[in-house]
Image (cartoon, rainbow over the protein chains, first blue to last red):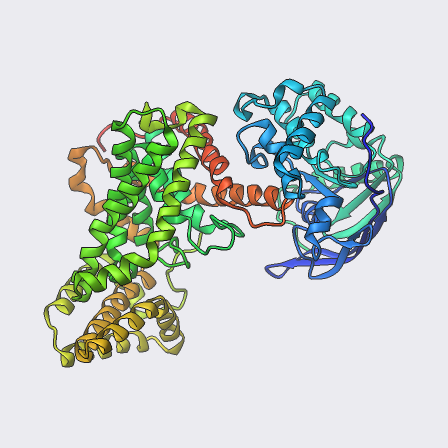
Length: 246
Length: 182
Length: 203
């Protein structure tokens, strides 16, 4: 599943802070990712999803910035489109167009490709994933797992150097998750993988734990994951449904 | 029965949502609100009766004090302005648009929906809004047309065209979703 | 979803909605009967007094709610200056401000729950055409429950767009939004039916 990358994705998160309605969501987060697959874990409400969006350039941090290969992803949206893509949780909240080929072509035309070139590239992307016949398929006829794949192909077709994935395989059955995770492992881009599925992160290159908007731990999976699980067991003993306070 | 109530309530909420989703405009660079297009869509997708009821429910919630109209306006006060004729015209617009979708059985959905949006969403709407404006402001037809209709015409025509495309898009994605065609 | 009820407490808040609404109807009729400048000026002064009585904070919120009327004021003055009928123009503007302000006053001083009660009561004659009060209550509840959901889904779709384009999200996202609304409708109708449905027995 080799792809010709335009560049290596080096992510530099520098002192990112963000508050909403008086609450601190992200608090001076800084870390660098130069390659490989980095897992991002944390409780619900810890700020992971917000961080994902800041890394993509969709939200402006109150302080700090995110540079990918030197590009400020919020300030320079044009360049950011070439650098980073994001895969969200629910394909139904993500897929805009009615047919597969249109959905894949969208990002390509927005990057400046002509309609014909975009179509060719989209068809090629489908073939690479063994779904050449999907082009004119209506999204409504696809299963959830198939829709997840369409979203993934749509992002990969744009050839970003970095991909952020916000719990992308939620609600999928085991075989489908297995297949999609396999694709993930073979990707050469830098991947920031937000997940509750700790099993999927066992073989990540690095795991970062975010707690209440701050960097709690950063290291190898076999170090961070057990520490996280231990802490979560403690929390489970308390009120896991309570509002998260600072 | 439950299905009808729920779909009416949800489409009423859709009209409101179209005015409240952030960072979204119908056409790049042109400041027109999506809300009146929501009215047209209720007609073309839900049909005359359900579409009309959805719009009535929306207006009821505006009257109850929710800031659902473009610009965060709402409450009983909006029904006291000279433009209240538009509000009173909205349910009729949806009804007429729905009627046309139901009766004109051509397979060219974008055309039929677009025409329904024009006849209902523009024709029927201004037939009520303009005379209301004239009475409310004691002005003549010429002033009413110039100040209450002309500025909105281009935007409304655009919305009617878009309604055609959107309705067609829904019909292609899920044919049974067009309740106006069941 | 926050309603337009003002958190600033006034004497009007404790007046029941029925009489308030009835007064509004009477006031609206009265405002439209008399066309003299004197009457309209006095009426407007009176309305301003109603807003000043609870204090300056309430007064300024009330003024803010009248701001959207400015295009009309401009139009009327331009048109009437052109036809040199300034007095008529002033009368129309004053009347409109009074009518809207009085209506806004009811909205600002009434709780939504009370207004829903009023509506349900007023809708009792509609029972004969099939509108049971429970249907109205359920519809309103569904609307309030699902509006934030639809807005959120719309926002996700806009994010999906913005993550792949530098242009603002366009009408294109309305199709998946409407589909999501239709899907939600399916699920919710099932849930409603599973909980006994809308009570179709006359209560």
